[in-house]
Image 1 (cartoon, one colour):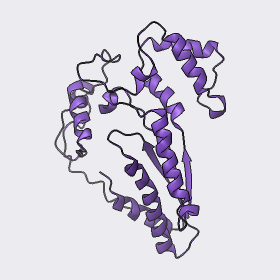
Image 2 (cartoon, one colour):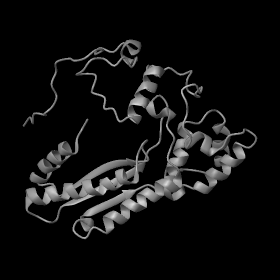
Image 3 (cartoon, rainbow, N blue to C red):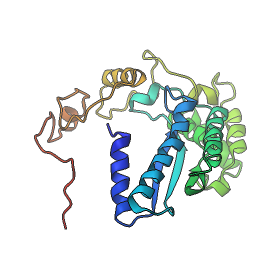
Image 4 (cartoon, rainbow, N blue to C red):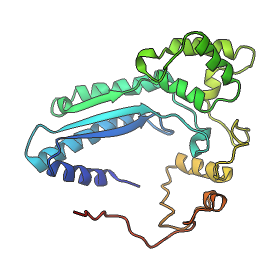
Length: 252
């Protein structure tokens, strides 16, 4: 529920108080996303720099865009979502990079940092994998995999080779765990674990997200009955509380 206008007002305040660089974080590969959605990241960066130049009267304003791939996680409304494949992720990232580089007015002031689709696919495999993935992890270890969270040690080929070995004879592959969409009737590997969230509520929220329905903060609005508050015995169970947080008041 944070608009681009909210962001521009905030960076204007930062630039107006002496800052010269802002870093924005994004994800690529979200459900219903299109190439045009990703290219709007470049447009937002341009708007940020433009506002910085307007506020400060200076041209040494920078905006760094940092992008990671979206990885669906268990116990969230996106646990049923398909993950964007490696080729599709990289293609969108390259289109965005080229759009930024071809901008003669603002491109040199926009920093671009991103992770390609390969580490994200492995993260997706581990994120929504079941006990069969244990053999894959062991195969990676036996093949020399160490410190794979560090780029210089990560080998996508090793993970795919180990997945083929570890999943042989199971009837499933990496795509089965990552890039396919789940249906409500499917029994998920983590269904026996209780996170406090009601599965039916998660499914309804997933459907709302596909229809781009915005959900208010339940601390200030009526309860959405997600299941967390009563199960975890939280103090604030039903909004609104009457407490106002925004806009923030600066305390000197």
